[in-house]
Image 1 (cartoon, rainbow, N blue to C red):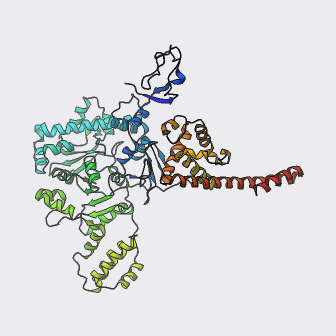
Image 2 (cartoon, rainbow, N blue to C red):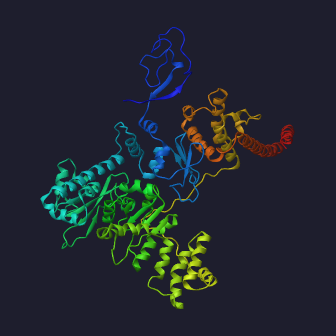
Image 3 (cartoon, rainbow, N blue to C red):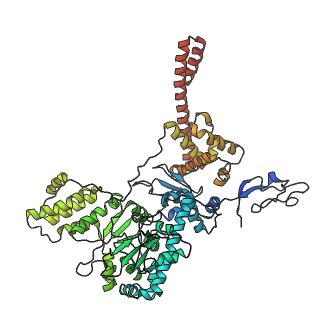
Length: 640
């Protein structure tokens, strides 16, 4: 079914008059939801002008920008129909990212990026336009017209191939006679049928080409298998399967698409690596995926906490006992891409990593990036004499793992207790070693109250004076937070730089968009004295106001339909600025603010004119034009 949109309404409340030979009968208006027939309507000036929506317009008509952004960021109300959040595109501690529901747009005043819900998904997911549109169309239940783009079709094709491979591996585990040992191993690890189906657990047969042959019969070429990371090129021609005689874990991205695989070796005597991952492909990048996030994201958002483990089995076992806000980092330090995924749902992390002497340092280094980005971090400690990881703890007693999560310790508390572990602060050397471990971490704490808390706690525990510790702290070198090697550098904020006239012009237009009646003030501004980028929008709004088409009851859509793309982008941005700066003001306060702004603009205009007059007088003096000099001097005196 084709969807139509209204692009202009002319006198909709009026009835057509006269004898009717229009397209829909005498005295009737054409329906806004039904296209005109091929013969023109005689009452077209009175009718609704309509045209079919394209795919992007239809998607945007079905979805709400605040709902889409809210899937990625925790939004807080910030004005009439606006929301704010910390910007996901640059590091900041104070929210400068705004979403404006009435205009279905977003803008960050910190890095000066903005757009609609499609551009937001493009930025967040690293998608091309068509990919983002298809992703949103699926959410909206819309079928888009066929359109082939090489990049998006490549990614879609690889996802399809990986999904076929996952279904093949799953069927092998459930049905193949040769997979008996794989089924026995899965059962020994507590992987029941429900968990296996949910996580797409499968088995890769021993043969060299079992998968390649099966998918080849379904139209998948050798080249496509190689690009998907499922096969390697053979020196003898053709390809051979990358995964053989392994328990297969399908790695799914945050949307549930199968991006790659991890294969766990089943033959204890084999000399191959115990675990093998898919190589990096167009859809799989190890540093940008968290195993289990597609299943855990809802519960993570609900609990406002993510539990991060090292192994796939930790995730499976946790889900099996009802702890479903658990993901796996595959034993690597958290990367910028992974943290970007996590912060869509929470800023609170609970980490369960190895905590031996070497593991402690590795844990701290691995969390540097998260600490630098102000994540709230807790450390989960398992009793080392009971279990080495969550999976083992669950196999012994699920309550051990549940209790460990409940008792997770703030990272500073964990650092504190780790420094005292196996040490007795009974002599000067022991005290010095403990202080050397803890003081660099205390020095990193920005909040002076929190820093003082830990200084006092350390002084009490060591039995030393606060003055002595303060002196030691001043001499303590601090290891800066190190970003993980795989992470991308943090983006810098690049707020828009405005001169005084540009800023005043923006504030004036923002107020007019919020309160069109301000056009009625006693001394209207002449558009020519505004900064040049804003003159066009001011003139258009003034014309619409004078004609009665722009008032406090006018919907944004009615304004948007008569603006060109560039002016519309400016209007959307200024509407968000209006909500940010002025939505809490009373009408009287807005009027007073408007008067101050107009006085500022006029003052700046007079100043600019005086500078120009001085330049013109110098030019007239050089040519000896006395009449011109007198005229310019008189005008200069009037301005002064």
